[in-house]
Length: 117
Image (tube, rainbow, N blue to C red; front, side, top):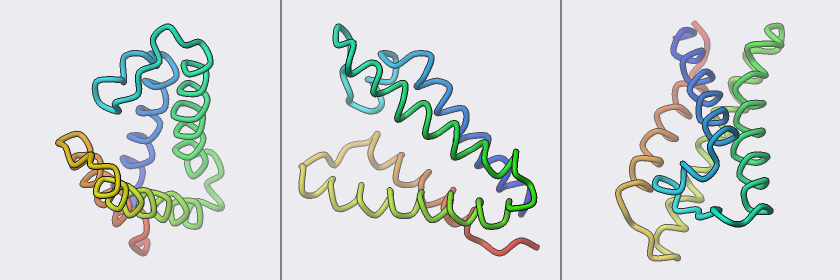
């Protein structure tokens, strides 16, 4: 199970790196259009890039706190999945990319909050 937690953390980092390096390239999946908007581009780099990189790196760098950090990362994924589910109905955005995101968020969340063995 610990290996799966590492994979989830690395997956989080990869999403962050892709978002930071290619903020306009994620528009097809996220629906965020930032092309021609420097402020929006910076926001995608900082939030989707920086936060995801930091959240994924934390348990890998601060190994003495890894169990708590994996728990926090998993809790974050589960809350995001919950908010996304509600928002999809409120916003009328029930579409494939959101459904895929929810599935990944729930899978990563469950893996990360599961007790270490």
